[in-house]
Amino acid sequence: MKHVLRVINVLATMVILVAFVVLLRTVFTPAGEIPTIMGYGFMRTLTGSMEPAIPVHSFIVVDTDNSQVYQVGDIITFHSSDDALEGSLNTHRIVSVEAASDGSPVYHTKGDANPVEDVAPVSAADVVGRVVFVSAGLGVVVSLLTNPLLFFPFIVVPLIVLLVLEIRHMVKTTQEVARAEDEAALRAAVEQIREKRRSEQEGQDDAKEQSDGEHTGGSVETDPGALDDSNRSA
Image (cartoon, rainbow, N blue to C red):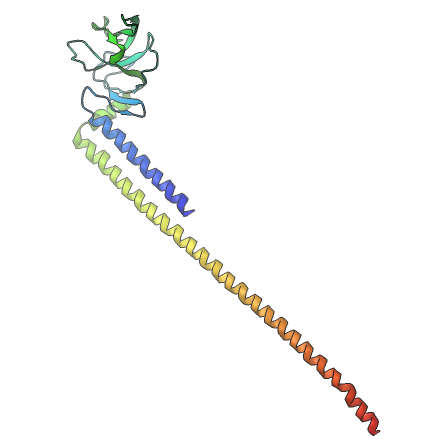
């Protein structure tokens, strides 16, 4: 039981640390890069070019598995080759697909809120992945947390406190379990001693009864001789 509780507490601590790492990577990843964990990227949109599907400052999750086939209607994140964007990340919807000279797909994209398609087509090599999750609420939270004056007092400090409390709880629980196990072992040892003493006492009682029986039998054997002497004198 003690080992099970220890494993549970270690797993809980690991979950807290993983959440903390994800938050750090999401908040502090430099512009033009996308943090990825287990094949999924996390980022925040900066413009409203995809409204209403993706409101401005939304938090989005991108599936970075590029082995999948992208189709018309998919929203993809890519490194734009538009001179005005200088290779920065962009997230738009695919409106058409054509094949390049080597047979690889080339995507034509457009922001839902934009009146025209993007000037530069998107090669397969420039695609980061397909958008699979959008949250405007989380985007607002991430926007607030990009301010270090808010991030450290409202996120870092509470997480540290939570981690310390979890470690204290883990130590306390482990000590309680160890104490309970020691008490149970002590009770078992005492019971074994009592059982041994009862067995010894029963053995002594049996031996005493047997000894008393033998002594009584020896006295009876001498009585007939005494009676015979009495009869002779008569």
